[in-house]
Every structure is written in C-alpha cells, then in structure tokens.
Length: 437
Image (cartoon, rainbow, N blue to C red; front, side, top):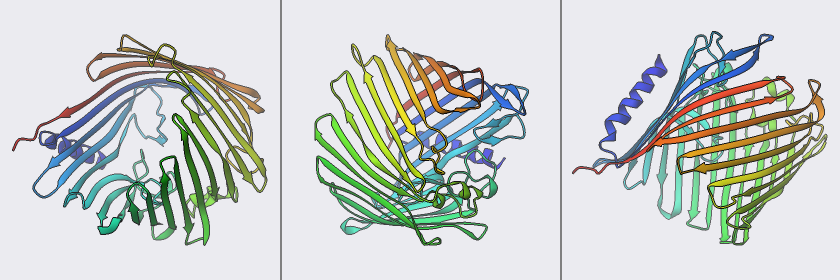
C-alpha cells in the first residue's frame, strides 16, 4: 500500500505539472506473457500480465527554479493458477508491482545548484549505481570545480522491503551515503575523487574511497580510468584503465585492463563471498570498423588471469544492411574458455553461434529473427548444447502506438522443450507545450 500511494502521488504530480512543462514524454507498455517454468519438480505454466508506465515532465519553469518530474513504475497480475516468482521476487498473491524511479529535481541559479528528491539511481564516482529513497545534490563551483553528494535508504527493486536479506546487487544496507569532488577542463580533462559508505542496521556494509578520470589530449585519443579502495578491508577493490583510439574515420580501437577483487563487490556479511575468486585480471581490446554504409565489423578479445589459471573470451560479429537500413542480417561467434578457478566462467567453456536478421516493411511493420546455439565443452545435465530461436513481429498502427508479438522456442540443458510467447502493446509520445505567460 505504501508503494501504491507513492505511485499515485507521483502520477498526480506528473499530470498536474504537464500543462506547465515545455516537454512531456510519456510511454505505456502492456505485456501479456505465456511461459513454462520448472518449479517444485514439475513443468508449470505462468501467464503474467504486466503494465509499465513512464512519465517525464521537463522544463517546468518557475521564478525560483526549473523543475523536472519523473516517474517509472510497473504492476503485474498472474492470470495463471500458480503463483510465480516475478522479476526475481516471490509474491504472496497474484498481484505485485513497484516504483523503479520517482523523483522531483530542481535546478537553481541557472543550474549552479540542483537538488533531486525521491526514488533514484546514483551513478557518480564509486556509488556503483545504488538505488535509494533519498536525495542527491550537485553544486557547480568557480574554476571548473564541482561537488555532489547523496544520502538515503537503499531499496531492492521489485521487493517489498528495504535492505536486509532481500537486498540485491552489491549493496545490502539500510542506509547509504556518499559524494564526489571533481575538477574539469572543458573538452580535455575531468578528474574526481569519491567516497561511498553503507550500513546495515548500524553494521558497516561498505566504506570505499575512489578516483576516476577522463582525458582527451587529442581528438583521436581518449583515456579513461577508475579505481576504488575498501577502507574497511584495507584492500584495492578495482582498478581499470582504457585507451580508445580513432585513427581513421569509421574505425575505433579500444585497449583496456581491469584488476578486480570480486569479494569486495559483495556486502561484507554476504555468504556468497566464499564462492568468488581472490582476484582476477582482464586485459584485451576491441575493434569496431564501419567498413561501408552497409557493413560493420566488430571483434574483441580478453585474457582472464587468475591464480588458478588463464581463461579466454573471444567474439566476432558482422552486421550487413543489404539494400539500405530497412534490412539487417548478421552473424556472431563467441568463444569462452574458463580459467579453472572460482570465476563465473571457470566451470565450463562454450562456443556460441548466433544468426540474426530484421526487416522493416512499409515503415509500419517490422519482423526479426534470432537463432542462438551454445556448444558446451562439458555436458550440462547430460546435454552438450542449448538451442533457441526467437521471432518478433511489430506493427505501428497509429502515431505513437505499436503492437508486437514475440515467441521463443528451444531446447536447453534445463528444459527438454521450452516455449515462451509475449504480446506487447506500446504507447510512446513526446508532447511540446508552449508556456503561457
């Protein structure tokens, strides 16, 4: 009920402000899914109905500040006879929902200072995309300096409680706060120092000090880097460095290195920390080449180095638009070889082959087809491969309105036969409202 009241309040605020906003973006998506799932030792069928709503009103001007109001929410009803886990949350009845984002942002003094209140996702510095019910402030200082900070109650998306056992991601906490101090030379350098901390009922969950930079010494070169240090564990949690080069038109090359201690990404009191590796290093690069207006080629390779051994990840992709952008065909190949340690890819390697295509007809009908096959180095549940095919058909029947039908069929090591079907109705529109003075 608390989240329902928040949803209705946010919708009312967004609707009330719409007539005074310069721009209002609205989208609504209705999805009806039919799927099979293996639960309690038997194959069961679920038919959930989802409704997703997004509203954003920007340019709401007053004599004191400029405002933006945003709301993103969803609700679902299970039309089947079995109650299922929906989006990761086990619901107690056939109805559930949540508010993903719902905030009001005010910009003062020509955006010198801004304040955002409500449910939001914080990405600054080493915040690690923490989602909170709280506030975030930003202050632009003279000389290119800036300050930002946030504080609030972490929320676990699609759950009915804050923090504790139901927290997801890398934050298990009942309170989180942090901030970033930065300096930038426009177009060339942006450097910052950040701090993030979280507590779970008073017990420290994380205390990290981070640094990041972006340097563009030449239009053909960009350097980025970031790192953070766990003050509580007194260890380096992550260090990454990347160089992106644009030697000629339509060609960019990326070289990168990343050092990670996976256990420090988990809350201090998480039992999962015993299953992760001590440390890992990824080094490699990627190339993207727009060979022509019709053809694009992508390739990347990374070497995974752990104490237990070395692993490899290789990918190549070709995308072709024969006859123009209305038609797309392509092929992709991936090779993953585990290191043999405790990394997520150590237990088994695989080869992946993917074929895909899309075609747009008469500017209103779009069809896609995606074929994927995995061939495992070692059998999984006595199966050596996984096959799946997905097809979609979308029809834009009116301005801002689109209907789509998608189906997936295949065979996996976990289900001998799998079939999912989804019907989707989407409304997307942007309104420009002239302010009356």
